[in-house]
Image (tube, rainbow, N blue to C red; front, side, top):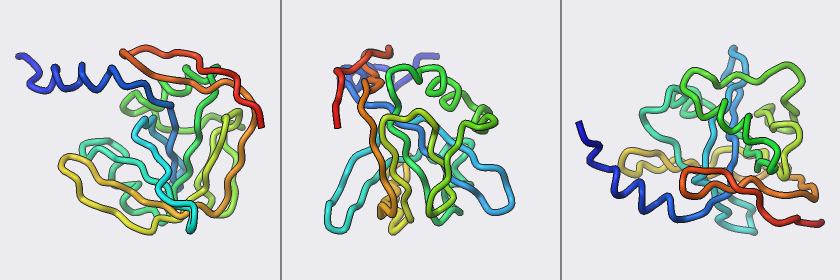
Length: 161
């Protein structure tokens, strides 16, 4: 059977994006994460960001029930983590891989930048939900970002503080 959305996916693949891992800490469960490229800043005052969650994702219920999430912008050497968290059923953090801040939604160690967020809105958008979060903690480091385009990883330019 032919994928009816293949041509659309191919067109979207022409747009290079950064790669993030978005995480949450569901009550009474271990933290989990998923690889996402649909992340963007929304506002500086207040500091708001958003990302989009597929309604069919295995982690959908966890994120819908969580009052917070963490966004880790991946460094160029974190393609393995991106692939792992993008694989269905592979959403758990490894020992020592998570760093916790205000909300307890983990940020991935070794990231290029991180945003710890409280959910302020969820918007229905077709086959996805848009999650808007207010940033309560952020950090950044110099390095090269992991970029995704044409279904392959690329190394971005060196970014200084």
